[in-house]
Amino acid sequence: MAKQPHNVPADGVGIQVPAGRIAAGRTRWQTVLVARDKPMVYRLHATDSLVVEVDGAARPIRVEAGASVDVLAKRIRVKAATGGAAHIAHGWYVLIS
Image (tube, rainbow, N blue to C red; front, side, top):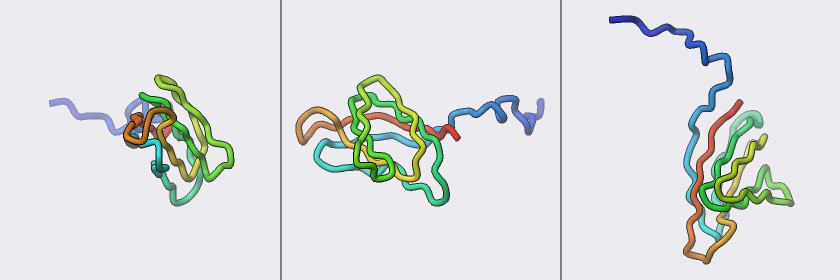
């Protein structure tokens, strides 16, 4: 049986590490991430349209369905951009660096 190498070539390339899923309603903000130390770059992928608030900014970012956005943040909150109160928007996010 072959041993797995400890250093995989992709280690130094900046591979996307799965971080989590998003399921947010339209009426309340959902806190997706609160980092402890320093801001990091995350990529948010929206399956449905999302409104994204980064580090309490006064102006949120709208991410359309099927699009993604990279953000440098310590705190990310999201909610559904369209639909009624019962509508749930989905997506996912990954740590870039």
